[in-house]
Every structure is written in structure tokens, then in C-alpha cells.
Image (cartoon, rainbow, N blue to C red; front, top):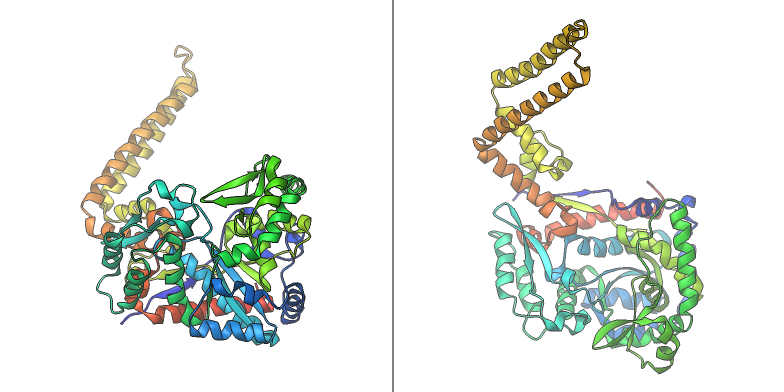
Length: 519
């Protein structure tokens, strides 16, 4: 069976995210400096181990969801005073887009590379943000069926509004799973779909289904899933949440100063703060940001487990609870870490280190054949209409194309002669702008005629356009980068564990460059 190719891509993102990804001294004003060689990673690991007490694993143990291999690796870290590499994501339907798994494999690969280079035990931990309340994003995923990208979505109901995802019941999704299976084709590996059915069952919540599926898929690789919505996590974070409420005004001023510095440097802060709201949510059924005026009162009255961090505070909480040597971040996260570091400093908490995650595209054999046949680059398919126009031009007879070119040339030539004659005839006081306007209008009519010719050519070239559109749907579903939209399950169903092996291999190469400071 032909195998897909896994391509390592540039992570992209805003100018601020790209600055953070580059690292080095030019990013040190807002970011913790990223280690550049094994010795610096060792120093970073030693510092991290000193910041977290030895009881962290015991406190969080009820929230760990892990198989035997993941438990073995994390237990060795605990026993030998090691460190963890973390990443995370809020729940997404059926495991979410490909980049969710890319993050987890990034953390695994960086753990392997750091341990190999420094001798310090390291384990990957995936922070599953089931305490998030963004139902709209968590309730959908994208698959490709019959060469067209389609969104699968859970309908919103009253229980989904404002509630943390660990508490939102999962509705019946059998029809959506059937569509997911249809997108997998005649799959040689039935296990991925079987795991989806097992996880997304009656009685589950949107959060618990996501956690269980990730644990089943990633646990055998040695990746521990931490359910951030579990009471053990919320209780462990309680004292830091109360402190964030007590000094809410100080945090607000620190963020404002950082935002001003970012804007002076030409950057837009990733997270827009609310002047009258703290960085802490109160969770009593629904989630609600604690107002500044109530912050101290809530800090005194809240019971352990009733508070949760917002997006800027969450990395500080994670770094305080875990011996995290680095967090594998996507472009949006890299951007907002510029604000998060200000929060950590103002709280007097350990500052988290953002590390750019691995980014990828899965190029399936049928897509590879299409791009090669038509002489395309993968990136060409981001603009499908340009490719279709190119293909249409290829089937337009040269004689037709030549006549269109001649028509354009004739318009320019004859009107240039007319301009000359008018300029030499005092009895015809016509401004040259009028002739230029006529020229542009006529050329626009020719443009419209050419578009009609190309449209007619496209109509007769349906099969080639269908194949190219199918390739574009695979690489850029719904006009988004594949990893940011497409669900991984159909790919795993088609190619089995071999795809994971290839992805791990590419992620490992990326991690080696991070550890040894290569570009």
C-alpha cells in the first residue's frame, strides 16, 4: 500500500508569533529565553525541578488519564525528580483538528530529545482544557467526503451555553460518526473509528469523550493526558486563583503596561483584556469572569474547585502545578505568551517558557500524483481559483488565445494612433484622459470576454478540475490549512499506526533542532 508523505511546515502566525518562534535575544523583552543547546536545557530543567515540590504528582494523580506506557514514563519522572514537557488544547469533536495531535507528538519528541541530550528523565503531558466553555469550537470538526470538505457539527442546546465542557452532556452523535467513517473510505484499520465510538458514547460529556479518545490514541506512545477540568486540578490551583483575585488590579496594570510596549513595537496584543474583569472565572454551573470590584470578596469566599483561570493565567497555573520545562505552543499561544509572562511576573510565579510546536501537512498518494501531474506546488492549492484558471488556459486553443492577445494589442495600437491624430488637430479639443478612459473600458470588456472563454473551457474540463479540487480539499479544507481544520481519524483509519510512525519521525527531527539550536 502506498504511504502518505508528512511534510514539516513553517508554523506561521502573526508577526508577534513569528518573533516568538524565532526566539533569541530579539524576543527576550517579552518572552523567557529559549534554551539553545543541551547544556542550557539542562540548566532550565534544574531550575524547573527546584520550583515544584515533590508532591505535585500525588496531588494531580486523579486527573491523569493514561495507559500503562504513559504511566510508566511519568512514574519514572516522579521517582527520579525529572521534568515534563507540556502542551494542550481545548476539546474538539472526535479529537479535533490534526494540530491537536501535532502538539502532543511535539511534546513527546521534545521530551525524548531533552532526555537523550541531558540524561534527565522527561515525560510529555497533554493539558486537556475541559474547563473551557467555548462550545462552538469544541462541537465541530472537518472531514473530506467524495473530494469535498464538510463540517460535522453538534447542534447547540441550552445546556451548552456558558458551561465548562466537562459538564456539557454529549448528545447522540451516531450519525456524525457514520459520516466520519464514510470519510475514512474502505479503511484497512478499523481501530480509530472503534475508539471514537467507544469514547463518544451515551453518558459522556464533550470534555470526557475528548479526554478518553486522546488517552486511547496517544497513551500507548507514552503521552499522559491531564484532564484540567478534574476537581484535583482545580483544587490544586485554588491558592494561585485566590492570589490572582487578591492582586487583580496589579495584574491589570501589568498587562496594560505590556500591551502598550507591544503596540509601541508595532504588534497587536493577542488577547484583548476587559478593564472591569479579573483573570479568574467563578464556576458555579456556568463560568463567569469575576468583576474587579468583587475580586477580593470572591477570593475570601470561594471554595476550592470553584475558580478557573482565563487564557492568560492558565499557562501560569500549569507551570506552577507541574515541573514544566517548556510548553509546545501554536501561533496564537505564542502571541499571547507575551502577555502571560507579564502576568507571571506580577504574581511572583514561575514564568512559563513557550516553545513553538511542530507543524505539518499530510500529503496522501492521490494528492501527490495530482500535484505532480499538473506541475503544482502544494501551496498552489491554497488558491484553487488560480489553479483552475491555469488549467483552463491550458485547454483554450492557441488560436483563440492568440486572437484575444491580438484584440488587446489592436485596442492599444489604434487608440494610441487616435490620440496622436487628436493632439495634432486643434479643431478637435478632446482631452487625452477621455481616450485613456475609453481604452481602459474596452480592455475591461476584453477581460470579461476572456473570463467567459475560460469559463467555457472550465466547463469542458470537468474531470481535471474535479481531481484538482479534491487535492485542494485535502490540503486546504474549507480554505484553511489542513492541520487547522481536518480531523486526523480518517487518515489514521486509512494508514494505521504507520502514519503515527512517520509523524513521530518528522516531529523527532524538529525536536532535535530545538534542543541543539539549529534553525
